[in-house]
Image (cartoon, rainbow, N blue to C red):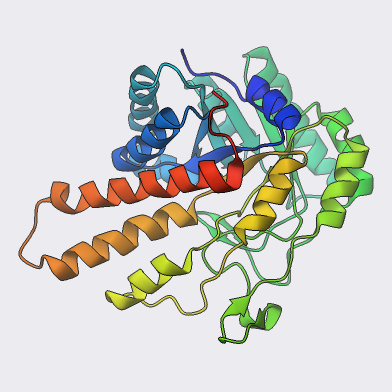
Length: 322
C-alpha cells in the first residue's frame, strides 16, 4: 500500500487500546531496522523526520528511503511525519514534498498565537490531504533543535484543550504530562533513588491525561519524549568509552498504561540512538582492526530492529494491528 496518513491508524488504536510508535529516522539503517520489525510483527508504524534530520540527510534522500521501505513492506500501513515543525514554511515544504502528516509545534507561543499558526497549517494541510498534530504545553529536555530548560516546562492545561482543538481543527494533540526529550529526562533532584541507588523518575501526570480525555472524547492524544533510556544500553555506552551519567527515561509500564487510554501515538527516538551507539562502541572495542562501515552498521541496524520490536510488543501493543 502507498504511504498513508495517521487518521485511520489512530481511530483503530483509540478503539483498540494500543498506540502506534512514531520513530525518528535520519539514515538508511534506522529506516530498515524500524520497518523490518514492524513488518514482521504486522504493526502500523510512523516514520518521523525532525527539522534537524531533514537538514542532515536531505529531504529527498529521506523520502526515497521511506518509499523503499513502503515498497518492501506492502502489508503494513506506514505514515511519513514531520516532527516538531516550527514554521508554516517548513510544514508546507514537507506537505508539498510527500509527507502524509506534519506537526506544527507552536507551544512556545501564546495560546492565541499557537491557535493562529496551527490553524494556518491545518488549512493548507487539509487542502492537500495531510493530517496535522499540534501541541499544548511544553516538554523539558533537548532533541535536535528543540530545547527547553528544566524548570521551564509546563503541563498542559486541560481546560484549554477543547477550545484549542475546536478552533484549530488539528487531527491529534501532543500534551505535556511529565515526559521529556532526550536521554536526560530528569535531573537527579527531580528523582528519588531505590535501595540500589538507581534513579527513579517521577510518575507521569495521569490526572492531566485523564482530564484531557474527558474534555476530548474519542480524540487522539500524542506523547512526545517517551524513550525509556534502557539502562543496559547506557551501561554499554559507558563501558565502551562513553560518558552518560544519570541518563534516565520514562518507565515502560507507565507508557503502556497511557497507550491503553487515549494515547494513540508515542514518540521514540533516544532509545534507538542509544541502542545504535552502544552497539557501535562495543563493536569498535572488540574489533579495533575493522574499518568497513558495513561491519559495524550491521549490528547497529539489528539493535534498532530489536529495540523497535520490543516497543511494539511490550509498550505500544500494536503487534498484529496492521
